[in-house]
Image (cartoon, rainbow over all chains, first blue to last red; front, side, top):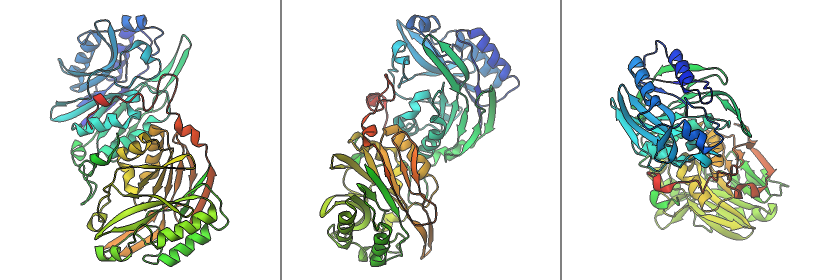
Amino acid sequence: MKVGYVQNSPLFGEKEKNFAQIEKLIDNIQADLIVLPELFATGYTFISKEEALNLAEKINGDTSIFLQQISQKTGAIIVGGFVEKEGSKIYNSSMMIFKEKIIGTYRKIHLYNKEKMWFSPGNKQFMIYEVNNVKIGIMICFDWIFPESARSLALLGADIIAHSANLVLPYCQNAMKTRCLENHVFAITANRIGTEERGKDKFIFTGASQITAFDGEVLSSAPVSEVFVDIIDIDIKAARNKSLNEFNNLFKDRRQELYKL
Amino acid sequence: MKVGYVQNSPLFGEKEKNFAQIEKLIDNIQADLIVLPELFATGYTFISKEEALNLAEKINGDTSIFLQQISQKTGAIIVGGFVEKEGSKIYNSSMMIFKEKIIGTYRKIHLYNKEKMWFSPGNKQFMIYEVNNVKIGIMICFDWIFPESARSLALLGADIIAHSANLVLPYCQNAMKTRCLENHVFAITANRIGTEERGKDKFIFTGASQITAFDGEVLSSAPVSEVFVDIIDIDIKAARNKSLNEFNNLFKDRRQELYKL
């Protein structure tokens, strides 16, 4: 299975330009799954809910149409972030597209920092989607710090976690080795680069998008400050075997009756 | 608070010699908490249940008496591993001693590999013990790979995790950075060194005992193949603050209703 990511450098609020950058980056690429960063078309550093609302879309908006186009071009399932609008609420969401179909969405469950000022927290459970016999779970950025996120997706059967991100702290890439190893899942962390200085906030996004194997091995690691695309071959079957040895199985060995969670 | 570990090199089955080695290693040391490895006095590589049973003790056996002596000498709370006997069952256990008192025990909940052939799995919940205003949780070796172990201890209020180990795989030390960061707890991973070749098994224990801070920083890292003791100063208060910033708290931000665990 050919999987990968696009590490882009969005301009705040410039959806069309950001779509165009990604289109150029994926020119001539064929794959089975491509993950784009969190909020890849809008930028991240909102200064008000109104501003985020102005860039929000229903599920079938411009971003969905763009993702359908690149899915058809690349042949890949595409996962990427957008500002999702439902009534007066907006969510920091990710959608999964395959060809002309919207497979599903995910609303970020653990909002980071000032996101809580404009976004509503995700109100749906972690879910996985099966496309072409591959089970894909979605989480977004800061969800990584809660072990319950990747654990929930893995227990639901995820082979691979599509992890769109806008990382500004240095911890996630290393932690993903543990997230993948403890669950025997693959993960694609698609991060962005660039700096956004808006209002009182200045964020430097840290790139280093990463594909991590079921055993914690880093299979792909992007540069920290250049746009980048990588597509690699993985054997998803490894994620379906939760055994470590003849005696130990990561899931069957769990002792839920003895935990305090 | 002065905390540390002893990284020893036990001889299989030679309790008295192993006690003596540790006594020498901690000569002149004063501390508040010292963690010893898993099964630090017996060795690890049993070839039958009978053999393990022969080295087993009730809670108030020779190992307990030894730990009371070194607790009195060092002034420290001591945590270390032993083969615990109860009726016809044996457990891979850890005990916590302070001066002449047995504070509590922990029976390894997640047994590794052939341990399942001789030990009964821990049948008591994860617990923490409070001594001198410090809340200490215990886990043993392979428990680290299950995020539920450290999470349970942290949610129960642990400031610090006493993590006795006999590590043979290369993953744990790095994973402990994530375990500590995701829970804002300190951890002391006390590992052993040396090789045991018994029956069909040969284990090379990997040393590199480690003290990890609440933010994932490695505060102490022992050599991989020498006996070693380290005692460092930590400020336990940092583990009682689960906030990452003005908006995010590692515990309050959990969304249990949306997890599938």
